[in-house]
Image: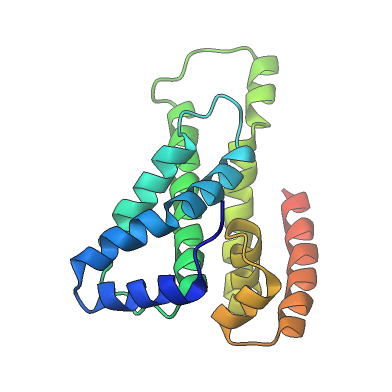
Length: 189
């Protein structure tokens, strides 16, 4: 399957922003498979019994995207960067809600050994990564965005550079430093 061309996606985004609803339908059919691949990439890092499916993640992100037609879309890379950010927030919100349920909601009683295994589930990793990314954003917003675009969004170095309006060398430098910083931050927990 080929990925949609940058030019056609950008044209449809601009037309949608100007109020052309037909362009939204064409855009949706053009980018759906790529959004689905992005969602599958996210879901691959989740635990096997996760109740949210890749398709539901795409649909939830889509609903949030359509609620933001006033967004000043720049191009295809910007669209997928925003989509990736939305998917990340949806999964983090889902993980936090699940974590809150475990703290009392519909929680069943388990032994201490079972609780230790549950505590090591991957949604904790996602929440820890989100917390670390938020801390990094407070110190260096651009490095945080580089991680978000590359790791979560699956954007290339060049696409990330285009979205952030910096050079590819700057993206690589930020990427290396941010990964080290995040690793150190997450290992503290």
